[in-house]
Image (cartoon, rainbow, N blue to C red; front, side, top):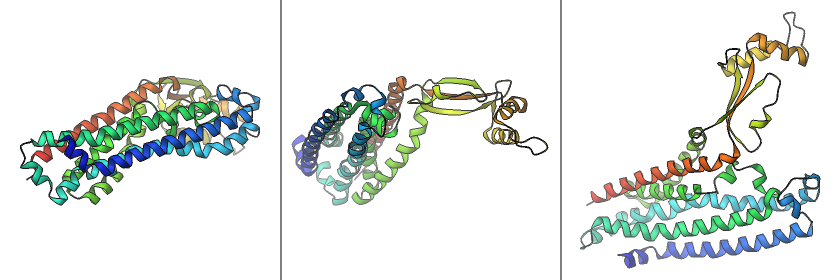
Length: 329
């Protein structure tokens, strides 16, 4: 069955090999040229630290202007790979068999449907994950050479950085692949399965992006009105922010905006100074500002939750695929 599955999947496997070879060659070449640029501009120190010579408008600005687009495209390629795996490998895997009727021959053989399905899944999925992991590692190696001169200066929670690190790309690929196989066996139409898989993956991927950060332990910072919440920003993941009253209860956004606006002028309509406005806020019921956030150092926890959610969905979808296939005639 492995041999038959390989023969059926040969075009996809050859394409994956070509993507790996071309992608690896491009990353190695681009990284080499980028390192030469860093050395020629004498920016080696800016890779690991931020100093006056590393600010925009200096040689560092010239470097970022020349390389930011290429680095972001490398990240975007890793972000897109899971969706492409689901659309071009997962969706047609069983949909093509059911659409062309070739599954009937497989079901009449001595091999069980479970074994037939398992062999096709392994032959299709394993090489795709190997290519994804290899390219993910290469792009990470490329980004590491740029260090703080590159996109990683935006922090671990920037969407381009988060989506290509740790186990998230693999979990997203598993989900996209499983989604494609499930839609394929339900629709029994290859083109329909590919279109629905792409649309559904995109919607779920972005819908869950805000949920994941709320499922890990957070830290809370409270400051008096007018003080800075800078400690909660930077590379941290902001979850929530707003105002508290004197009792420490959250003030709704609409009410907080109305109270803050009312404090800007006196009863006679005279505009207050900044100091007067800040003094008015506690009297009106806006005692403190607060921010809830996930520290950048805890990004691994968010990745773990992200991988667990998408991995769990993939398992459910694969189980659904097996259930539907066992009932196909």
